[in-house]
Image 1 (tube, rainbow, N blue to C red):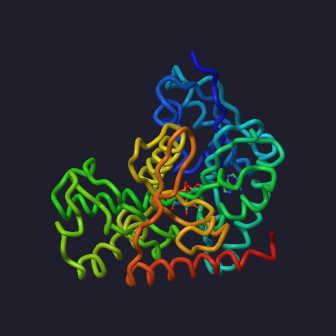
Image 2: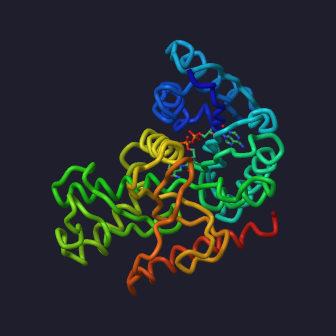
Length: 327
Ligand code: NAX
């Protein structure tokens, strides 16, 4: 049987953590034959640590056969020790009266410290997924703070946007979600993301022709996907948690185990593909195999798409400029 791998999760006592940990421990992320050791990080605050202990009690009570060990931490330098996978979920939420730039700099501190800790103690091939918002910029900060680790191993979560877009297309066409291929989401995890079904197919048929409605694309589809997070908050009184945890599982599982040719979306550091400046943490369509992702290249970018890509890129560059002096 396989040796256990180490999976670090931050923000482990939060609502996404609660929807995430049980699925990781049951083998849904890394496979039903892969034992895991959970290294859980929460802030030192007594209430958070106590809540984390409670979650660990419930994990124990599941008696998961694949859960080979579990640790509670309040310091990233111990939480990330030898970790093979790191899911950075915990972040500073926007408090009352907090300006965007205060939010950026509060998170810059967290992700600088966590990037440095990964750099110092994690496995040299640790795969990092940043979920905590602003996810792309936080991933960029962590990457920049970890110069000894491969840049390509730092990623941001765009998968929830991708899955939201799949569902909207399935509803519009009346076809099952499982048949939709070749969807792409470009850019930032924010309402500026550009969900692009120009290349998508269902059973080999072009989705664009099935829908054939540019007004729907511009005025319904893109705003619905872009503002879905706000719509969930409005309906539930809480932000997306189970769907976010599900997207994190999808992202890591596909990265580790491969997509068998299927396109998925990951936020990854650019190497200049599609004119995006190097290091910008950008949502791209990728395929994965053997634990590595590969950008889908050579797609035609029409004028409307270029406009949307420029918009989301501009927002990302503004965020990154806003934290440059802190790095
Ligand atoms: P919660 O507030 O329920 O939980 C966050 C937890 O993180 C808290 O328990 C807190 O104590 C902990 N935490 C804060 N700073 C920490 C640090 N420096 N180290 C370790 N733990 C720390 O939030 P939740 O709903 O779980 O959301 C977590 C993050 O995911 C938020 O930043 C949220 O904005 C972001 N999201 C990102 C999404 C994406 O698609 N990329 C979608 C869902 C979600 O909104």
